[in-house]
Image 1 (cartoon, rainbow, N blue to C red):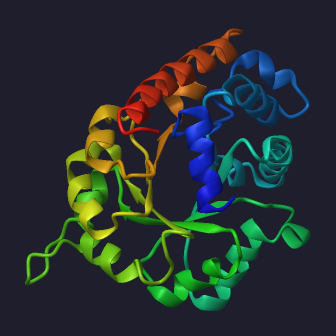
Image 2 (cartoon, rainbow, N blue to C red):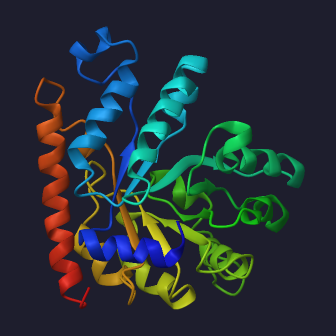
Length: 279
């Protein structure tokens, strides 16, 4: 999915909601565990319940890889199912990859080269620590995106990301300034945590046109309206992720209904926000 298609999708659904499929088998409703593939069945029902409200889905690879081959089968089935909604959602592999060039090339093939790997994600999250040559292999796939970690929402982000150099420049700002020339706003996004929403204004000065993937709204306590206040661009430019607050809104037989209600509530807020900027 290219940039204009993503923007059109946001406009048509009046939403910039990304749903994280952090599908922990220990947390899914107990009655699903009798299914042939409990995680896939959970994901399928969540997707069916929320596809009207979400523009993106983001499987977190940890919850699949931790289950070995069976977990990867669940992920494959989930991605195959999302192919039914190819024009209705953007897909992100939350994998946080990044290594020396030849290794990154293999990681890129794993997520983007469907004839080889079976996966056809639109985007993958990538760590920038090893520099341009660890990132550029992901940019070699036409129509695919990388989502580069910039300023994350976790407590430990301050250990490195907020370190100042001798010119008082923060490390995450240097990452933004250096990396924005590796790709473009057509194939690169940035992760910026919702719990640091006030810093989005400074981030927008550096990358005014790039999309930002914003985790931390919902269970982590980030404010959607604060994120929008500081982070919106003329084309929206945001994908706001919610995971646990939607997919685990209930662990009972009504989990689909509760997930749909949470997603609808966020979409309605987003619709109001987008109307305010003429989208």
